[in-house]
Amino acid sequence: MKVTVYQNSGKKTKKKVELIDEIFAIEPNDHAIYLDVKQYLANQRQGTHKSKERAEISGSTRKIKRQKGTGTARAGSIKSPIFRGGGRAFGPRPRDYRFKLNRKLKVLARKSALSYKSKEEGIMVLEDFNLEAPRTQDYLKILKSLALDDKKTLLVLPSADKNIWLSSRNLPKAKVTTVDSLHTYDLLHAERLLISESSVEKIENLLK
Image (cartoon, rainbow, N blue to C red; front, side, top):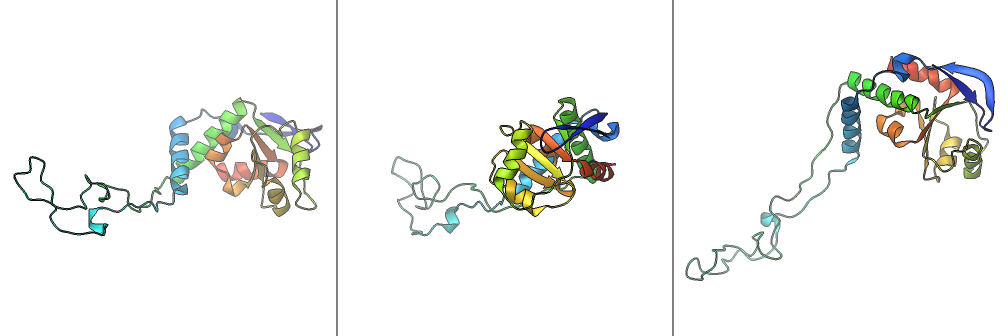
């Protein structure tokens, strides 16, 4: 599949880039996408949640009423979960939510996400460009020239570019990443995928 290369001014060039079918036109595997996104979201969790259980509550250990003859249920401690101010029963404890996925499954998930984007005609290839200084208005001008300033965009660069990253940081719908950091979640979250011309070959080498 061949796509036209655009300038960052929004104009089409005479160049075309080949997006190979083995990556951009496979039969998407929804379960692989689900697992990869699930792992990504799980890895974002800090897992520092904690509530006090009855053994951790400070208070008297005195038996609060006699065992029998009260007409109500027996109760041995004011720290019981059934009383106000008592410990929580089966409360959350700190834990690690991360889990492992095989590399081949992750590659399949990324190929599937790219194929979905390709079917939706949501991929645009841009000529390589640089910004002389970090300036949000310069990056916003590029998005406006591409008629993408009101859409969620993901720009994929071959390597980190500090000026471009800083220029996009304050735009809530714009995100910049590198080929090495490309993830299924980011691909699906973006309405339009912008790939720099030199990133296409790196994506193909990474996902082959």
